[in-house]
Image (cartoon, rainbow, N blue to C red; front, side, top):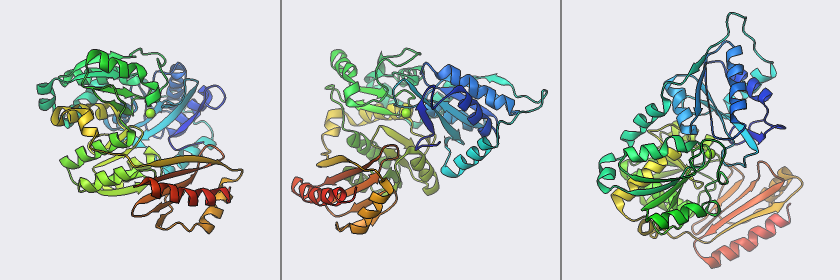
Length: 433
Ligand code: MG
């Protein structure tokens, strides 16, 4: 039932009010705070979750439409478990349940506990032992106060950056307000509180309106969230979308300047991420793909920062889920302290890369065959799929978590080296799938 980030699927067939009630019930071994993004199926699932908690005899706190990092903060503030009703960047016909405890997504071990409660059936408290529904008392304001001191507001208010922000979901209720409070001039796009006004994922192809807006108003930078506001993407002052690996590198260097230490990223992290961590004097820790692993490892290793090149940034002093709201404020801080985004990002040059999919009928057998006959040189790691690291290239062969395909990611420092290793990897995978 659980994927790489909670439970997610099509509303009506895979995700139903009944499921929301039962999962909330199974997760209510403490009181439960429930929030949601702006999906039209959110209110129905949210109310089912309240019921699941209250009939288990626990109180349910309603925070309404909030970004996932704000819901995570609520689990710390109210010392309770939390459910975020969201399908993140999936299309609007999807929805899902993200389970959060102590400020981060629950790990695989805790998922098992929830599933076992779920399988035992709905827990029904006696007629006089039902929980209460408690309205929120200003979690957004409390969260703003929590993250405000984490950025240099003096530098920002002195510079008065002009920021265009495309919210398209839950981020609309907090990020523009936070940025204005920090002293920015803010131009907003897509701030309606029901549904999405563009596809949820803040990828280059979905942000043409923001790119035009940045140029039209002469903004210093453009920012865009996904539907649940845990991601943020960056556009420079020329209206150009900044490469996701470059965005992450920029953030890594910025965080390492403040505090040296460990940085967490996944087996998909590219060479420029490795370079940025090295250049910043940090140590890179690699986890399997998914923010649950990044957040969990960040805590265990006492790392200063964690991130994935999808606009996902986790800060040690913040909540330990990706935080697009704090991320937005950090990009503004980077501009205020270091200057033009296009000049900062031009210092990074992404290396040549290949990303391919290979169809297979049996992912497990294919992976075993690949592992048995692999002869590409380098240090082998099996954290998630097979990753090989060498001096001037790396590759990852990984079975998809949801589709019958094997994915190949390959990056090299030169085009010649890329072609050479690509031919070898292609031959190996094609003879194994
Ligand atoms: Mg998201």
